[in-house]
Length: 103
Image (cartoon, rainbow, N blue to C red; front, side, top):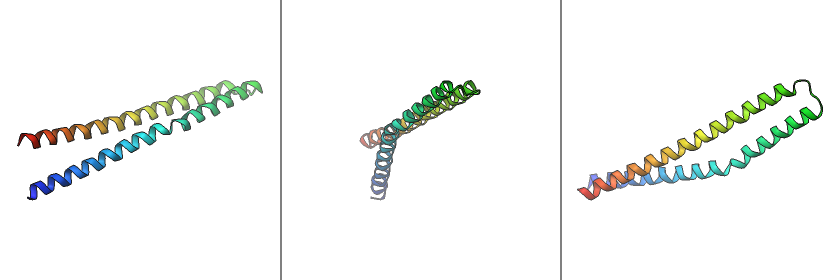
């Protein structure tokens, strides 16, 4: 009976972890508009710098481009990390189900 109880507890824990990861992935992907609005603001800043002939407009453009590129890389890396963790949880669940059916 103790092993059955432990199995049920592990299953509940993994289901909760899976649901939490799915929600995290969903909210992470829903925040895409924040990144896009930051890019739009940076583009507006660059256009205004060139329009008003700011002496360091090229340097400002390069810096903002680097910030955009870095944030995009980090955003995708986090997205990929959450997806991989979710896949790992699903695979562990399949292994447990397969072992349970085998016994």
